[in-house]
Amino acid sequence: MPSSPVLLCAGNSSVVVHQWEGSYTQKGRALVWAIPVINKQQRSGSLEFTVTPAIPNDFFPLTVSWTSDTTLALLTATKVTQADDGSPVDYSQDVSFHPDKYEIV
Image (cartoon, rainbow, N blue to C red; front, side, top):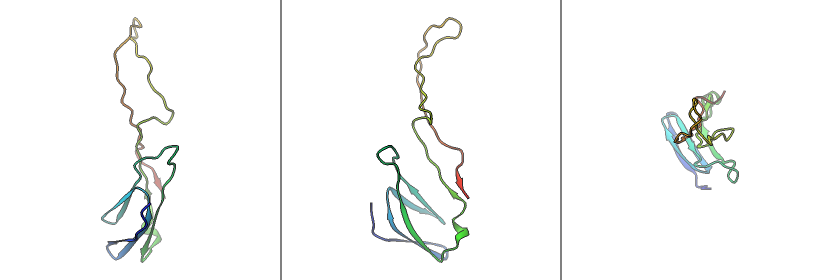
């Protein structure tokens, strides 16, 4: 976990990032933080920062997004057959799980 403070400027505010896991970038007035993998071994991460001047309403809504290569229920196709005669069909499966919108307000 890197821990060297990094100063970013956004308009009239300055953002100091103190500690982080993963990576982050500043896009305009947004601080975009990414954790590449979340799994059983790596269940959480943290990003510590301060903003001066701090105006609480500037932090909300907080938008969170994620993607996964597995479904929430771990569903998978094991066999595909023709409806009319039950004969097997060659198939492939692509899984992508991502919410349309997730906000903390």
